[in-house]
Image (tube, rainbow, N blue to C red):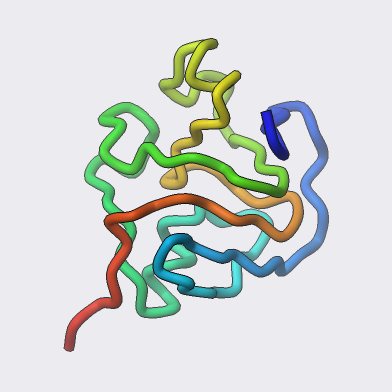
Length: 109
């Protein structure tokens, strides 16, 4: 898996840069904040619903970088984790990250 997640990894201070492909959207991602929330504050909509890692509406792939989860079970199967999938509603960056989220869109006024 490229990058990876390690729930036991200490979170770095950040903030980090997040890049969302294929749209090329960039936003600042504080270490102790979920990627969906950081994206929203930067004017970007990532698909989401529950924001607690259970509904899986936000499921996307981590292309590069490292994330951690503030909860022990983030709602992913072992196979999904091995393939690089993450839940950005609860995933917190531990480095600069690139995610593949084709449904990401700018927020409209």
